[in-house]
Amino acid sequence: MSHPGGGRGDRLEQADHTWGSRVNYGSNDNQNSPLHLAAIKGNIEMCSLLLKFGAKRYVTNHINRTAAQMAAENGHFHCAAMINNFVPQEEVRYYTLPEFTGAEPKLPPELEGIFYRFIMMTNIHPVKVVFELPPVFLVNDNALKIVNVLQLMSKRQFYKKEECPSTVEMLSFKFHYLATILFELAKPNDDTSKKQTDPKDVFIQKISTVENYLQQFLYECIVKFCPKDTTLFRKMVSYMVQGMDSLPPLDIILLLVGNKRAQSVESTAEPSPTCAACDEINPSKKCPKCKAVQYCNRECLKIHSVMHKKKCKQIRKEIKDLKSSEETSALAKCLSKIGIK
Ligand SMILES: [Zn+2]
Ligand SMILES: [Zn+2]
Image 1 (cartoon, protein in one colour):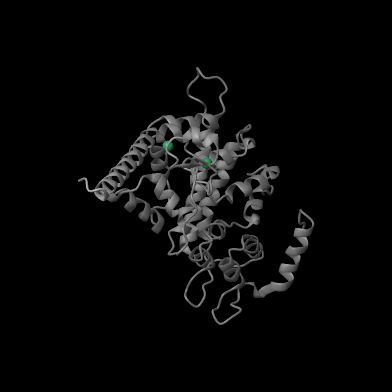
Image 2 (image 1 turned 90 degrees about the vertical axis):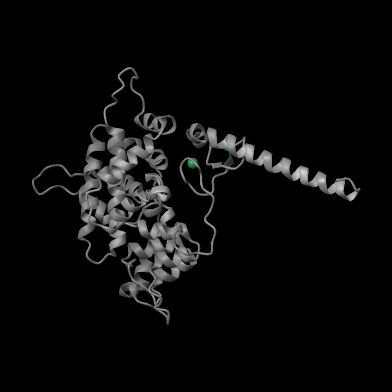
């Protein structure tokens, strides 16, 4: 087996040698597996190594919690998301092998690494997916090949008998969802007046300017998810039809499949602030007007500005009202001190 990156490879071999077949066994009274212990500490690199060497994420400890649940309970949401989203690279490599029929592989072998990194992403907000989508996916007929592989992977999850059903359903939906976005980007541009625009820009522009475009797009994505007889699909539908309490499709996807999934677990830790446009954690910029909403950069601010306009005005008004009511009460206090009512 070849390990790119020298030193990293040595550590991989070492981990394999040390853990060996004991990788899934509880090593203490709490029946925590090595993956549990790494997850409790929030050690993403170690969790990733253990998973690569066969650690099973469905193994539970004495309180019936998986490693991802333990990570989330300890506030390591990113680590929990990584464990939930982990896919062995062999699953991708399988599609790069020549077909028995002699036809070319379903996935061009040179795309294996780049495709693998793409499907392992944990923040699946559509804006982030489009940002991270490698441009080579949109070259020639790569998009249709990748859409096909994603659809096959989506179906294949259900053949994993060992895996816990919620992970199977979540990964199956994730691949269907990524395929839906890529298919949308690969569609021929129906607006012939615009020549040769980048499909990523067209999609982002529609999201930020066409009202309800994104929610309608994601609603269709949920409805077209084929395995209807799943807990995940039933949950999604129930969230959509709860009347006043119903959630928009984007929130449903982020909550049940995306990075809000880990945060929904009982935890005393506060979730990190996220970008209003792409949901990436710990954004560095604030809306210059209301300072109440955060963004990664100017690009994210621009995408979200149209949607935020109304809300921004409302927030600024609320802050102003609050300040003036504070000032009035402070003034009243001063006046009452000197005997004026
Ligand atoms: Zn962002
Ligand atoms: Zn604002």
